[in-house]
Image 1 (cartoon, rainbow over the protein chains, first blue to last red):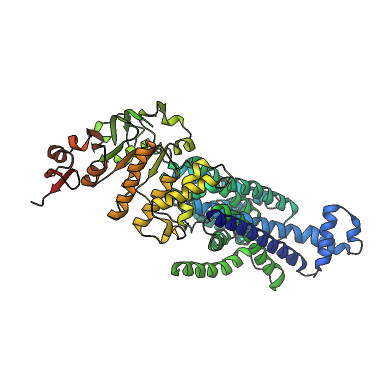
Image 2: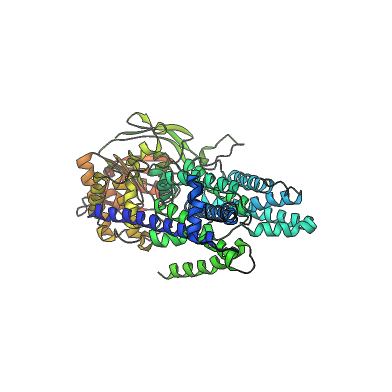
Length: 349
Length: 268
């Protein structure tokens, strides 16, 4: 009987992955067709087939303008957005598992503040003209913050439990607070540049290129693979350090690997698109309501759901609203109330 | 499986600038003791006497400052974590779980040391989980969320998880503290049976001296990080020892019904 139950749940996860992927695909198609110029699904699929097969027959009757809009403008933005959504959601699931706290998110450890600080410096030094410099500074800021936080939370007493979740959260909050003050100072120094900083901080997917797609999706692929590899260990860590250790988990190794993975995913996301809140917090929560807390299911489903929902939000701000509002603001405005609702509901159960 | 502890010392809060350690700072001070297979050992002593720390050293969760622990003549530090998890299981004092796993998921995690990264449960794993669930009487809890159970029920699930590890050594850290007497006795009877059948070794921390006296083959009394007595209940459970360990007056008698020495306290 038990093996039957298992088979059913495994099948169910498979079905869910298929279903979610299908939704994502539909969302990508819908999003590609929407915008200043409406482009039909048939044209879009033909353009995509043309790009994949390199067979010019597919696009013989499609105007050059449409091809440029889809291939050079919409698809890079859409795919960057989907990859960032996936990366933030996976990162959120990892942090919630490592910090034993369902309320943790990719930014709990101050990674976003670090990235923002880096980006502010780049903007202030007027390096924005070189197109990689803001992302590069943001990324460096995020990674340096991560290592500072790890350094702060390491205690020499107990080699195994060097990263207690309390230590990590506290170090993260302190570091983020200092960096926020630093950002305020940089804004104060920035004079007329201040609007650039503010807009960057609110997040946007406008004018993303295939370079961005490549950068985020390669991080996401590697990060996802590592997360799945350690998903079962992450499950055990949520039983508590001592229990996990006695069940054969090398806690320090697993925590360091997943901490770095989660932070890299957050860092690459922030450096490409600015700070987008609530995706990393909300998506794993929603997925857990469907699958239960098993990370072997939560991580893949969160990735796909995160991609779909962030793309949905970005499509609204890009193609539905009269004026494009920053995506970070939109996700907070939608995600905040939704989170409150889920949170309240899960309390009542 | 034989456990040999040699010159084992450990201190919390190691101050690197101040290498000189006084004896009083040590949580575990120069333990020399052997545990043989097929025996039930109980660890007793006041709070902070080093019982839990000693178990943590046995599982390799803490690293000794000096001295070593051998499992069948092999230093436990030379085992990989997963190998060690096949030898020693622990029911820890802390059984709080923050995520709403089902009991079945939690109990099944006891098979983790035997599973590859991507392999799922095989038939043997499932049989073991089902057997353990039956003997620990948690069949009716299996589908429920661990976060919704009472303390005693959760403790039984954690116990079941440790039994699923099928280890020759089982460490219990106040594993019965929240269980009712019926469930604790059933579990202990089951363990006694396993000791007979498969020759496993049990080391259990108890606070209840009478409880320990009924079940143990050997009692080990700790105080301030030192072993001050070890031997059969008949031998070490004396009024003098209880006074020395807990600084409290006690009366000890052999109780016919329990067929063991029992201790009585008075408020006077």
